[in-house]
Amino acid sequence: MFFLDEAVALAAGHRPCGQCRHADYGAFKAAWTDAFGAWPGPSDADHELHSARACPGARYLRHHQDDASNLPPGAMCRTDQLTLLITRSGARVYQPEGYGPLRPRPTGRVTVLTNPVTLNVLRAGYAPMLHASART
Image 1: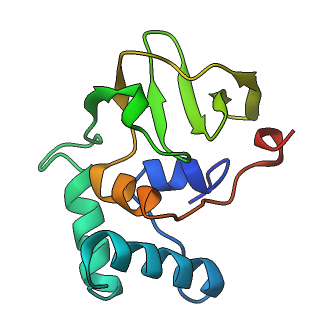
Image 2: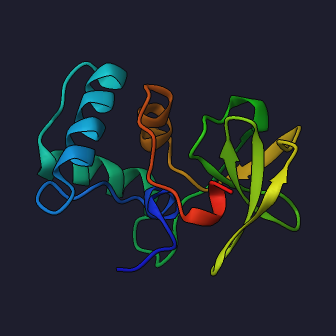
């Protein structure tokens, strides 16, 4: 699987690999523990992530509505016309080749692409690795 960066992979319901990204895996586990009280192990975590993202019997991902002010940095959302990465200081428009310039965070209701389990891990302090275009 190839994604622009980890924020997009998290929005798709994935987590860091315990072998090739061991330090990030450890940070994800620690944030999961802070969010939920215990790390269930990789297989059970994958099951929870899959259940939170996939519509049973369908070939598409679940999305939900929320107020943009509730989203932590690293979350992905969609407005009527834009897909956005939420950052500490605003938002950036997502495109497959990279993110656009920093803009104000959206207001009001948005379609949240990142699943609720991962949102709680992000709220607990996990910081995903971002594409260079998000850091400029």
